[in-house]
Picture 1: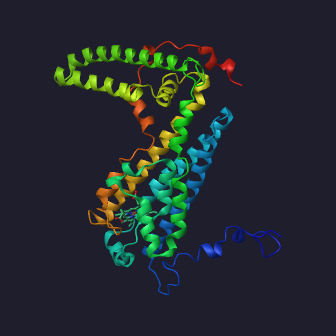
Picture 2: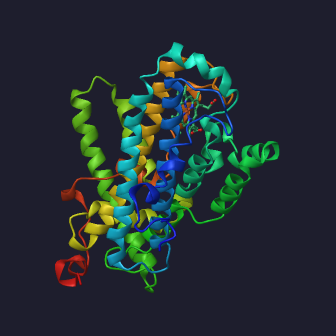
Picture 3: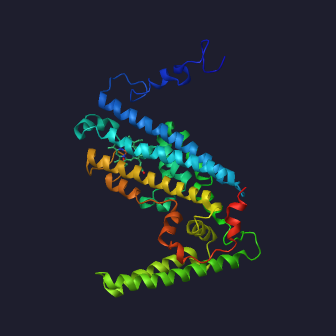
Length: 364
Ligand code: HEM
């Protein structure tokens, strides 16, 4: 007999542990008081989000583990993509779930808001864990917030937070998705050259130089065209185009030397039609979609909050909507967003070397 069953067959209710699950909406452990329908709705929605977070975390870990090795088989990339795609769909669903929350009117929320005291989504350790796992750094958070310090304080106050704190302490020391992605991108064969090849640096530098020269010529043409029709004065326009070129240089050669991860990413994005780059490109698209869906999830949360509590201080003591809006500016996979600013049209790209290496003949 399976450990799930107490009778002769596995039942729906035993498999899903429904009796236990449906007992969990009373609001507090041992709470005798009846809660009203609005509050039940409030609790169920939070619990559903936390369950989704649980799944998101395990999907992100699977994706991270697959991408973590020093050599990742090409056949593994579709698996990473499918884990990321599942997370993206969950985030999209969660972004829409706020609509159900919005059926709670501001007045109806006030009926039980005081009871929440300082309890807030701020204390959701799974949310913090998924940020750690994706690679959000403290200095990139609003006002350099330190979730671990916050969690240590919470765990000191109440042991209910100790397992969450342990999880966070473990996760912060694991490689993040952003880190493993950058390492993977660094190994991209660029112009047919592999990172371990003797003359790799020279080939990659040459690619970057040619790319920047092509961009310069294009920018000059665009500047001439735009200045004929734009309402913006020529000096301002010139400054803008020059700044774009300068940012491309800084992106590809921060501190003067080529960043191979970014060069690899640019190579994949620029020559995205090459068959061998099809899955790497899909992988990058999946990361971008994932982050976009995460940003939309945060944005819709902020709009829902604005609708229900206006601009008042949050139960966790933050500035409320202003804080939540600040979190919509977070970008973890910055390089993937950054490369979009420096892409140029196909016809202006430097000629590809060793194109046969990226063609169908070489796909196993
Ligand atoms: C009436 C419904 C809700 C209101 C008014 C609300 C309000 C807020 C506010 C004001 C904050 C900022 C922190 C603070 O000072 O408290 C916050 C954070 C948060 N809320 Fe909500 N929330 C609601 C529902 C939800 C639900 C259903 C979830 C699902 C788990 C959720 C998850 C979170 C999370 C994870 C944070 C932390 C965000 C971050 O720091 O990036 N909230 N919420």
